[in-house]
Image (tube, rainbow, N blue to C red; front, side):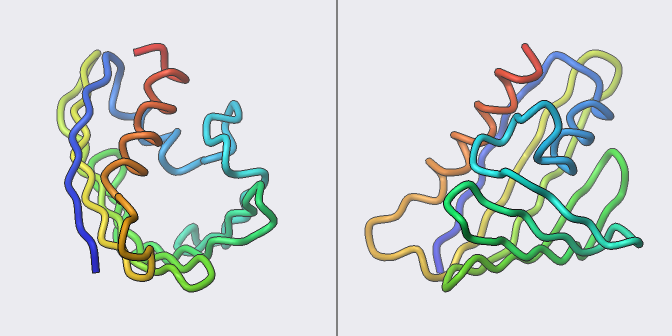
Length: 126
C-alpha cells in the first residue's frame, strides 16, 4: 500500500470546493472522467473514465462541506480517499489523504493527487 497526504488552498467558499469534489463532471474539471452516475442516496457512485474503464466509489462519510471519505476500486487498483475542508467565507484549505493498493513499484500517488488538486485550482480560478 502507498499513502500520501497533500494540502491545497483555494480562495473560495468551502461549499464550492465541496461541489466540485463531489461532482467530477461539473464543468468538465476532471479531464479523466467522461461520465458520473450516483445512487439515489448519494453514498455510491460510478465514474466512467475516458480510458474506457470504470471507477466504483463507496462513500463512507459525507459531511457537507467539511469531510468527504470513500473507498474506490478501478480494475486492480483499490484504496481510500479522505478530504477535510477547513475555512469559510472566501478561503478553503483542503487536506487530502490517499491510500492506494495495486499501483506498482514506481507509482507516485502524491503526484496523482497533486495533479487533480491542480485541475481543481484551474477550474475554480483560485
